[in-house]
Length: 179
Image 1: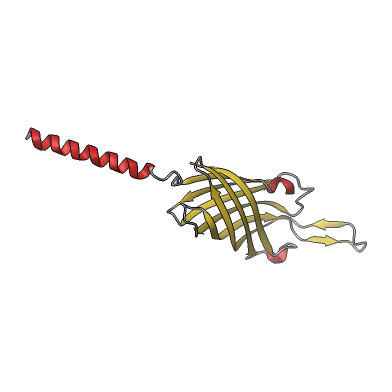
Image 2: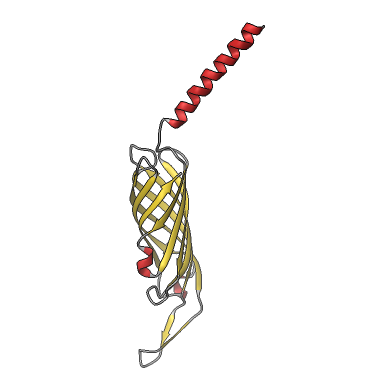
C-alpha cells in the first residue's frame, strides 16, 4: 500500500512540474493588457484600453475615450467602445489584426447658424450607438511592453440626423503593458 501511495505522489509531482513548465514556457502568453493612447491628448482627450486575450488569435476589449479640452475637440464628448480582434501574427496575440467594434457615444447636437453665418446655437447632446471595423498592428516585447497602431471607421445607427456627423473614427498609437 505504501509503495502504491508513494508511486502516486511521485507521478503527481512530475505531472505538476510538467504542467507548470508548459504555462511558463511562453512569455508572451499573458492574457491581460492595459494601454494608453498617445494620440488622444493631441485632440484634447484621454483614451484608455483594456484587452483580454481569449487564445492565440483572438481577444475582446473595451476602450474609454473622454474629452477634457473642448477647444480642440469641439464635437465629441466621450465614447465607450467594446471590440473583438482577430490576430494574424505568429506570436501570441500580436502582429496584424482586424477588429469589429461597437460604440456608445455622446456627440454635440446639430449647429443651427444665424443669417450672418457666424453665430450659431447648438442643440442638446446626442447619444447614439455606432458599429464599425478597423485594422492595426501590435508588437509585444518579452518584458510585456505593448506597442500598438490602429485605425477604425464606423457609422452612427440611430440619431445621425440630430448631429452634424454620421460617422465615427478611431485612431490609435498606444503603449501599454501585458500582464
